[in-house]
Image 1 (cartoon, helix red, strand yellow):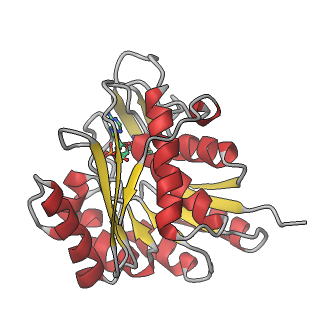
Image 2 (tube, helix red, strand yellow; image 1 turned 135 degrees about the vertical axis):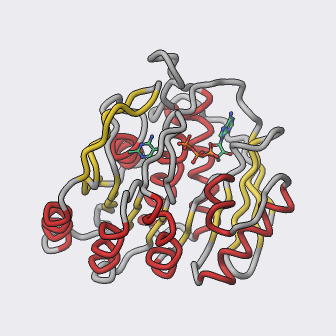
Image 3 (cartoon, protein in one colour; image 1 turned 30 degrees about the vertical axis):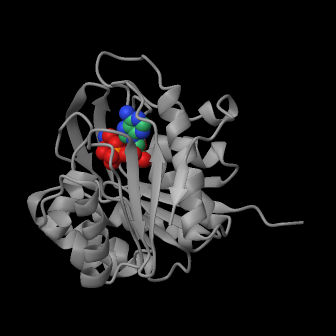
Length: 273
Ligand SMILES: Nc1ncnc2c1ncn2[C@@H]1O[C@H](COP(=O)(O)OP(=O)(O)OP(=O)(O)O)[C@@H](O)[C@H]1O
Ligand SMILES: Cc1ncc(CO)c(N)n1
């Protein structure tokens, strides 16, 4: 009998259920992956924005990580909101003990535009986390920050993916094109090949938590031993379905639908490499 696969998310929370830890666990569950979570910050947020944030003390983050690492098998790790440099240092030290693919979502601001990481922390994402990372998943503003490049075209997105791999030692970079006009296209560079994943753009404002959901789905598929380009393709189909059937809930950007893959069986993702 094959062993159950488990994935760990290390991230902040969203009590309204669409982003952060909550999105990750829903995604893991939907993909029949045993979900585990370590909370870095409690974020009082909803579809309209962030009200307040309470960061967990470092000792509490460390205890949570030890509780998982010392007891549970982990087949994939995903990180989201890591708000400060000391948190990053601690998480790096702990992740060095975990032998599993690692998906790093370099979360900086919420869909609503609120900051989720402090200024000092932003500058240490590259140095601390990228060397351990299997695949980093920036959106365009995050990729611009990480590379210092300006990104306005698909060619720029490819250039940024190559730059991250060649300059910062990350195994692979997936630049997400949700913020570009036209089709929703993402580029993955794994040091050898450039892959593109394109889907039709869905006309909706309800995209709260798309980035978290996508990265969590990639982690779940990597935990099931899918090769990275295939894991990204499956995850892209998952997030596209989740946006297609997203919920008109709340007063701002509504959440994506984590069970949509059960209902959207047609997978119109064009994968080229
Ligand atoms: N309107 C849309 N229609 C179809 N796909 C979309 C749409 N918006 C985003 N996507 C896709 O959703 C995924 C997440 O991309 P996006 O660039 O929005 O991430 P993000 O900005 O990190 O998300 P978040 O809003 O959670 O911060 C990508 O595959 C992107 O192409
Ligand atoms: C905790 C958290 N992580 C990530 C995002 C980005 O969507 C968010 N809104 N909240």
